[in-house]
Each structure stands twice: as C-alpha cells, then as structure tokens.
Image (cartoon, rainbow, N blue to C red; front, side, top):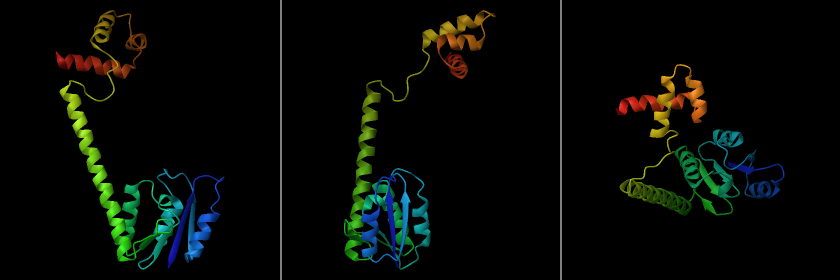
Length: 187
C-alpha cells in the first residue's frame, strides 16, 4: 500500500499541491502535519510510520517534507528499510523499492557521513590551533582575581552579607560561592 505523508508549516500554506501529487501517486491513506520543519515532534508522521507495514511504501511530495535534516531523513528511511517499508519522494524521483533508488539514497547517506566527518575534523583542528595560542573556548568567567579579592575583603566585614556582596559585584550568590571555593582549591 502507498502511504502518503505531507507537511505544511503554517495554516496560510496550502496543502492541495502535495495532496494532489500523493493521490496521483496512488496513496490510499494520507497523513498530514501542520508544523514547522524544525519541530522534533510530528504526531501525524509518527502515526504514518506506525501504520506502515512490511511491503508498504511511504510517499512524500518532496524530501524536505519528511526530514528535519539530511541526517534525520537518512535515519528515518533506514528505520523504514529495516521494517521492510519502502520510501518514495516524488519530486526528487527517489524510490528505495528499486535498486537504483536504494543506490542513490545510500550515496546521499555516504555524503552526509562524509560531510559530518569533515566538519568534526575541521572543528578539532580549529580547537587545537586555538589552544596552542592559549585561547580556550567557553564563556568567560563572571569573576576575575580582582573581583574575588574584593569579595573576600568585603566578607571580612560582618555587616556585609553574601547577598549584598553578590549584588554589588553583579553576580549570583552561587557564582560568588563557586569562585570563592575555586580560589581556596587553587591555593
């Protein structure tokens, strides 16, 4: 059975184009989500995936209607494939029920993995270069040595509370305590 899935992002968009294409492709049941492409939860997609049985084919009008990203798209299609469910994208003419369609889809998967490994290698090299120059990532500390000395001096006066000192320095009580504790450890 051909099972259709379509997604529109807002109520202002018209789903007629997708619906007509899916009906023309022979979809007997069509599931529709009205939700942003970046959303993690897609209830009607989950229903479509649960509805599909071995031998069925999930059909979408375009690849971007199914996956949030290439990685998400590949993992979804691999999960379908493991259950014996085919996948077809009408616009891109990809059909994993045919050997050629599976080949094209696996090439997409290989390219996505290659891209991720290049990004990881580039990121790692950049971080190593920054460390070699004495730069470390992350957010700069809220307090420096001068602030910590000032806080210690203010704490020596019993009239000053931790709350008052933290407000004066523009940090939370937790931040003040954390930096004071770290200062003790560093000594």
